[in-house]
Amino acid sequence: TEELLRKTEKLKVAGQLAAGIAHEIRNPLTALKGFAKLMCHANEESKQRYYQIMKEEFNRIELILGELLILAKPQVVDYRPYDTIAILNEVIELLNTQAIMNNVLIEIEFESGLPYVKCERNQLKQVFVNVIKNAIEAMPAGGSLQVSARMMTNGVAYVFVDQGLGISEERLPRIGEPFYTTKEKGTGLGLMVSFAIIDEHQGHIEYQSKVGVGTTVLIELPACS
Ligand code: ADP
Ligand code: MG
Image (cartoon, rainbow, N blue to C red):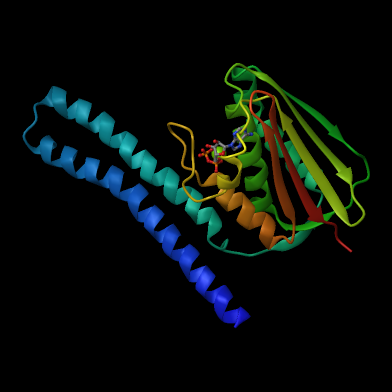
């Protein structure tokens, strides 16, 4: 019965996800169809304008599919021991320009001699990207983002503390739900994908937040034995 329950639950989640995807992609598609029709009889000037709008809708579909593809199994599932601090540093370097442009200062504090973690490199990178991007986006007026890593008994703990808008108690349980977003241009897929990845890595991810104070994200991953 437990097996059956799990399967039923999985089917339910798959159904919800499929409905969400269909909905999110149908909207831009409907717009595209309308503009394609208008294009047929438009003059040069209008055509240019329609094309600009259509390009945005195409980009939207591409963005949604891109995030969903990360969730799909990577072409080569390659779990290997990695120095995750090197991965984290790479991500921070990658996002630092965006941080600076948003007046966000990223401060790091990594314990030395941390153990390696067995992981799918690109997937873990994606998790760090999602969490740090969200932190930057949560601080429209700037602020600091503290990123630290320390040893635990059986693994490594990564902590991200931002001074952003925060998440209210009612909204906190919705974090990671497919398509749940409070951003105008958000997809609401970043955390769903990240939670799934951490789960696959036998890890743990936790959100603590206070409106107007900020958000703390704790990620724990088991160390290589
Ligand atoms: P997206 O970034 O596209 O909205 P995510 O899955 O990455 O989708 O995040 C879902 C929602 O969770 C965000 O829209 C935001 O409301 C909330 N959220 C995530 N991280 C933070 C954070 N650090 N501070 C405040 N809100 C956050
Ligand atoms: Mg996000």
